[in-house]
Length: 140
Length: 137
Image (cartoon, each protein chain N blue to C red):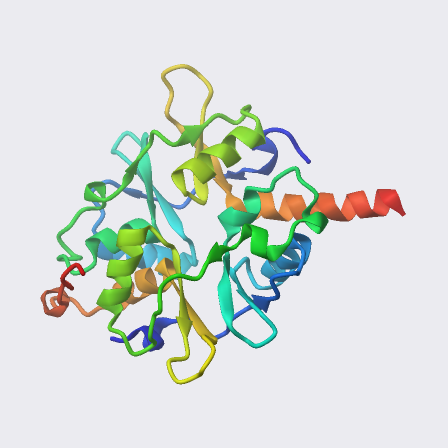
């Protein structure tokens, strides 16, 4: 199973300059999924998660920019990587969402988001008795 | 912005027993499109919560014979219905959790009253922004 088989292909994006109110409105419209921040060239900057927005509870959301709330993009995650590799990264870094980038584009263009819920969904579908075939990836 | 946990919490919770297998918990999350499941003991007292992220710990294990009690987040992260919302938000951010179990305020009681979701706080924040804008017009 590869990351591209499980990731959400519908990426919700905003600009770094957008207000947190705009980001929150987009989240609400999309069942509270995380929002990927990208610049005008399409290059990914980071991700605004639900917890990142909640941190600004009580503040003027109109005055806060998306780039102030986002977690910067750090890991190059290829859509062809095995799902075990994604799990290893998520466990090690305690990150809930991985941004998947297009490995063939010049700028790092987001083409999907993999959340722990996508993996939970996959675990619910694994056939009985096949767990032993899943390899554990060595730590880097 | 409403000030107390009880004003935003959802009554009741998706739950399972401590002996439930990881596979069944994954199915509960998938069927309900839920990111969490509250784990209780036979006396229906809350033991903790299992999230989609905590299921990652069990990936590659025997999903049918591993009980959820081995991976759950113990119920140290609970809050009372009369606690201020700001306290719940601090707890969420400190522990990086999106759901907080709301338990009775009565001393010694660990009965589940409901769950406070990050989504409900976000909805309230958006509503508040909208009403501030209306007030300024």
